[in-house]
Each structure stands twice: as C-alpha cells, then as structure tokens.
Amino acid sequence: MGIRLGVNIDHIATLREVRQAQYPDILEALFLCERGGADQITVHLREDRRHIQDHDVSRLLEHNQLPLNLEMAFVPEMVTKARKWRPYSVTLVPERRAEMTTESGLDLARVKKKIKLLQSLQRAVRVYGFIDASFKQVELAKELELDGIEFHTGPFAHAFEKSVRGKSDKELKKEIHKLFSAAKLATSLGLEVKAGHGLTVRNVGELLKMPGLSEMNIGHAIVARSVMIGLEASVIEMKSAILKTRSFSI
Image (cartoon, rainbow, N blue to C red):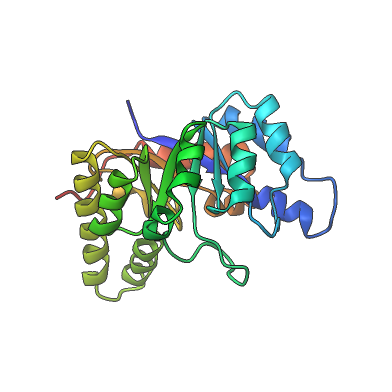
C-alpha cells in the first residue's frame, strides 16, 4: 500500500471567514479533493475558531466518504467534542493564540499529566500526536499507547528551501536524518508514522523513504496552488508527486 495523502482544507474555511461569507463551501472543497484522489480529509478545529467551525466538522462527517482526521488541542472542550463526533482519527496538536500556524510539535509530557482525559478520548477514537522528530517524544507516544505519531516537518521544509537557494545542504541532511531515525524508532515500537507541515510538491520526494511512513497531511501548499490551477488539479498534482521515485534513506 502506498503513502496516503491527507488533504487539510482549513484554508478553504480561512477564505470564507476572512469575509464572514458563506463561500467557498467546505463541502464543495471536500468533493473536489475526493475527485482528485485524496485518501483522507484533515481539519484543525482551533480554540479560537479562526477557520474551521463546529458546523464544518458536523457537515464533513455527514457527507464525507473519506476518513476524517480532526486536529485539535488537548483540552477538555475538544475532547468532549471529539468523543461526541467520533471522527476516524484525532491528532493532538499544540496551539498558541498568537501563532500564524503550528510552530512546533506537541510536548507529550503535558499530555501525560492528564492521562485520564487522554484515556477517555482513546476509548472513543484513534489518537495520534503531532510531535517533533525526537526519540523522547516517540517513546512517550508509545508509553501513552497512542495509535501513532505525525512528525512536524516544518524544520525540514525550512532547511529544504535554504538548500534550494544555494546554501549548504548540511542542515537539510541533518533534518532528514532526524526524521528518518525517529521514524525508524517509532516503527520498531509499533507506532504508525505520519508526516506534515510545510510539505510541497517540490520537497515531498525527499521524505518518501522515511521508515514506516504511511501518510502525509498537506494543506497550505495544495490550497495555495489551487488558486492557480483549481483544487482538484492541485490534489492530483500533489498525489502524483508522492507517487514519484523515492529519494533519501538511512
């Protein structure tokens, strides 16, 4: 089985919310992603509701033919909603009100302090942690009995852009090694391995040999490209990039 493409459609809602309009419609985006070959739909219901709203999640669950992955902060309000909605999976992510986008992985040590809250969520849905490529975080994910992890690939994406601009690729190789080593450990511990953040058509090829990689969740690059070529075509383009020849390995 190949690597799955999870399409994050948060920024479809961002375009709607910036004008407090009824369009673009989140369901139309869903159907175009399905037609383009997406394997999953991902949305992040933030505490500040800056893009995805509660009614978006309800509508997606009602009409979605694909698995729905709900990204959310590990707080009682969101746990209650996830237990009610029962999406295909939940990915726990860190949130700061002032951030433009997710800036780092979640420290699972904080999740460990609220183990009963986590266990109540785990009884209802598959739970993943969005983490940095750290052995400590991988081991905590195993200790907490998470179903898997999603590696924060932002540092890799940043290093890739520096390399493309002609600067040393030493940082890029370092970030790839960190991701691949942490993924190798996660796989050995029986954790499912995913990746996301800052991934584009240009850089995904560098990660396709990541040990155990089952899924990439990509949003901003797909939605941004869709302004030029349309959403369905943008999903097709990204899917094709993921199916190309693989690159680095360890």
